[in-house]
Figure 1 (cartoon, rainbow, N blue to C red):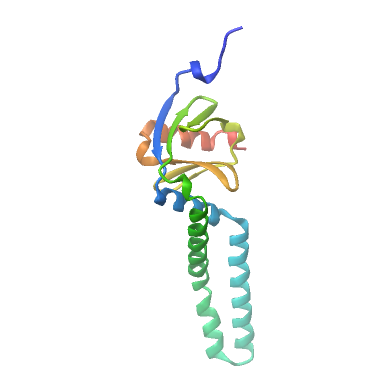
Figure 2: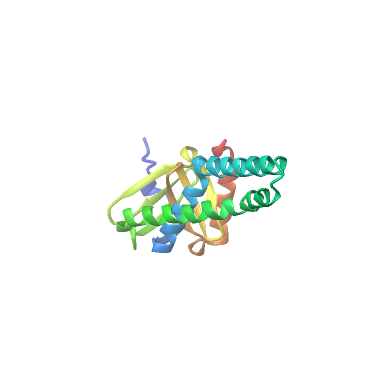
Length: 172
């Protein structure tokens, strides 16, 4: 029987990453933004502000109603500031990850993340999502666990490959 381990396969694409403080902060902020808890809190706060605004209008207190209605667009700003604070706190907790060198190797059905301390192979089928921002791809295995792949280290072919996986049946 022939050995088909990835150590004998040639990767389709390769990428290298040095995790910077900025990359980690953006990763934690991405996770926090995707959090269902954050979205629910923001929607709940907006509903409460709108309800108070309507009740104040019905009571004839237009000035107070305007204040409540003016607060609605400020809620996302407040939540964003709160998320940044949470991201900073998480970053401080996991600061030992700074400057970790990671080599990514992408194959047809999986990818590998190789550091000086570990070698992890992950099937694309196990991904919960592939997130994409203007600077990074996030290969998320769980709500709070994933790999950070900087776009500046990806060629157009690798970016196209990751986008294809994002749309493929791997992520039903």
